Amino acid sequence: MPPPERRDPNRAFVFGIDAERYHRARPSYPAALIDDLVQLGGRRVLDVGCGTGKAGALFVARGCEVLGVEPDERMAAIARRSGLPVEIDTFERWDPAGRTFELVVSGQAWHWVDPRIGPAKAAGVLVPGGSLAVFRNRPGHEPFIRTRLDEVYRRVVPDLARDSTVFGGEGVSRTDEMIGAIDRSRRFEPATIRVYPWDATYTTEQYLDGLQTHSDHLLLASATLGRLLEGIRDVLDANGGCITIDFETTLICARRTG
Image: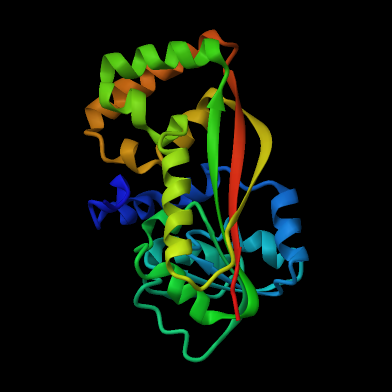
């Protein structure tokens, strides 16, 4: 069964409703992760599902030549604004036109790619020995704050209290699914996993801004979302107007055989 977010093919396009907010509010990625990938020798980089260029820009800053592939023109427009070249298409349909890369990356987007197609296509555009690297931020909350937030979610949107990506839902199962798909392609050496811990502190307004970039929140009725945000605002204001998120960025990396 495909991951839950793939059941609605239009869900991947809700982020572009407010692409500026997405670019402003979504977390970046730890410098150590990007440094490790560049040290693999990846100077020609393909960024799959590049969005607004949050990951791609980090590779550009380290002297890499990066090409983005992104299905949403609204998201791509922001990436291009910062100088990242982007071609509009899904990765499954995208035509590499004979181009090859040393590194194929995907930050927070690989779960949108068809697992029956994505790994083999990535292998097809990688040079021998090149690597596929997919990574994803998983947030963690301090126990006291998590308890108070859970109370708000159970009251307003109980279905999200357990499974929302805001709380790191499906992190382990999704990692297993991605590794399984890479292994089944028979085009890569066994995948490795590395976790990069880091943290970030947000004001109440910054945190609420970020919540409104998650697809499961964006798809809520406006009145429901409003009640949810108001309840969360009360929790964070009572916490001094800020919240610290303990992130774990999980990297799945696999080297192409042959």
